[in-house]
Image 1 (cartoon, rainbow, N blue to C red):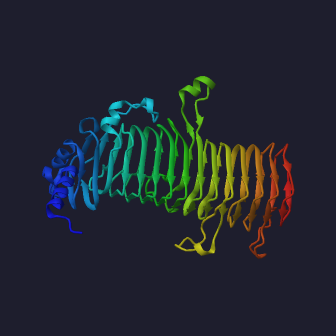
Image 2 (tube, rainbow, N blue to C red):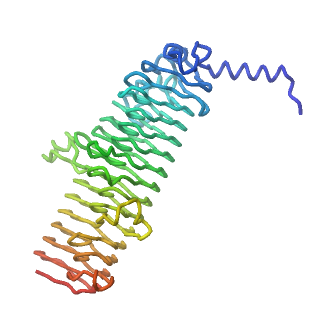
Length: 463
């Protein structure tokens, strides 16, 4: 069926008017002209803003003041590039939301003018050392999709207060700072789905302080987010210092690289937070934040794969660990930790990348209570005094694990009380010249424990 030409022209003009191309405001997109003023003018005019194919130079931040612009969206088809040549974010979305996610806390004007600001299909690069990609302050339902940010400082910077953020199908690559930065922000309900977050020097997904809840990180590839010559970083860092972060699900991701950076971690949780109300009620100055589930992920090639301090309520299940150069798992001063159904391995397939089997692997719990290590397969721990160590703690459940072919003791328990250790396979069946001569199970300075049946290749020792 042929469509009359006049109808095609009418549709095209209607779409153009609706879209609000930045070219209509004088932007050139030629990579030479400073398009800052033209794009700001297009934003201030309101409506849906389209960036056609081209390279757009910015020398200052484009401010998207949602109270002034009304509903706002920046849309491209993957062929438009923003080059941020000044300090600060290329785009700063500013809303007025001061409430929570509860409907009664949302002002009517937010639904009428501000909700769901969007960026889609756009690339942002930076040439200034303090250039960022996108910053959001006071927004409700910020949605970023198919966005690429590289060679900036921070790719996405979340500040002050936001709610209900969705980041999907994005690439945050090779920035000097952080991929997605929860910067002392009050933010509940944020989803990060299907993204590549790689080679950002200050960390991949980082939350410092603030009040952060309900974070879902799913089916992402997160790797190499550590500057080799910079301060310690993590692919995912949940740091409650000065605030709190909790209620987090990290599911179905590949998280790895690089052991070459000092104290690198794939996931690092610093749960010691602050809550003035809790301090008034209990006198405790530091909280133990948590309620984090880590499931179905693949971890490798860092100093410590998962590191947990001062936390409560962390579940680690169904993950695969290898190449923890210091250790695979470190848990300190924490409670209600569940580690079950994971595979901790040294696979011959991965004696590559010039590492020469330098990784140690292994698991260490220090001063933990009400914690369970069950149903895991742990093998190939080298150069440690034990494959699995518990130092201090009480009411521990250590059962149905296979701890195999490792140096030192398979399982070392020291200073532990009121705990159950049973039904583990603790064996080293490597060739005689490499087999450990240490007791498979070593128990030191412990009392009030139940030691059940365990399958041992080299006996047990109790002192």
